[in-house]
Image (cartoon, rainbow, N blue to C red; front, side):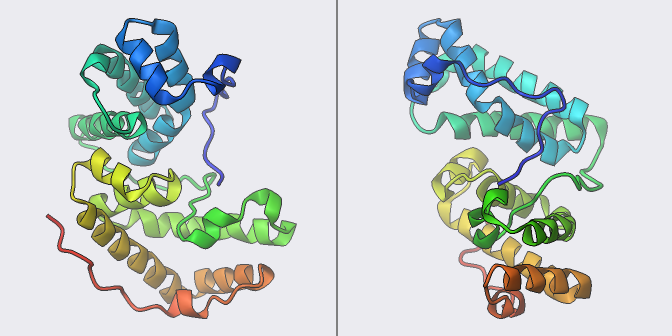
Length: 237
């Protein structure tokens, strides 16, 4: 999956980080090991930045939100007990991003056309290295329509799609990040994906692009594009 890189690039993880899992780094950080915490920052800074960027749609604000996220994480690292540190960091980042939006009375708007938005499993399963050049070009063009459909979603549904289909969290991690029930995650994701399917089906150029892409990949788009809006699995609460 392609993501939008930070404009200043991103340094690779030092070798020790590859051999220490998040739990070990958290325990060391809780004991006051700043180097261990810095390894957590290096490991998670890029995805945290991307979450903030997708919510704020401003590189400078997203960088500020990312910095604030890790400052707050360091200040509160001793309060972290169990669970996914990734979910914990995303929760801090999303809360900080929404605080910034409320403070500036801004709403997410516009389109990050440079970013590939991979919505359904077919998009996540095919990286640029697995695609033909024609298919890759079509996917990039189609991403503009996917981005438009994603932007049109209600905030709660867009956030679930962002965390599951773009950032790759599982349902339990999303429930933990957003502070909602597991069934609510599934409900919101089902509704959001159905709306995105409908948006593609109702937009002739988008539908044509999607069908051309899947033909190149040897897939059948008929069932996906024509699928009706799925009923909610569980009421949001």
